[in-house]
Length: 171
View 1 (tube, rainbow, N blue to C red):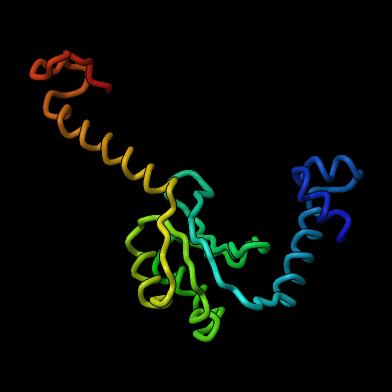
View 2 (view 1 turned 135 degrees about the horizontal axis):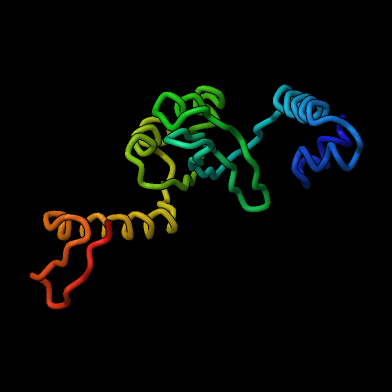
């Protein structure tokens, strides 16, 4: 099982199954077994720095919350939450307990307010570093939103005549 699970980290599960003349289900079972074993034997040890982010995993607004250990010399995924909610993120702190949470010195996150609220409540002693990528993304998003507000009253596809340079409004 470990053999298939290791190859499934490098290839897709379908490619792993084809390469070793087995079924996708057997690769899936091998991965589930190894992940289950890892979760049962997981040891957090000392965690000084964590990063929190989310990824979209399906069409629509379905997200997973991810927490990584980002200590120097130790980078690993610590926890995955099924949603992007306050309750989900609090589940991470429930798992690690208050003693380990109190030892976290640095935390990297985006500017999503529910995450910031949980961080303030559970990790107030940590220095919260706002992720540069997310700050730049928020600035760009804000600029696009501002441009949309200036243009929107004129309707899609119409020329805005009040600006110095007439621009075609995107649909």
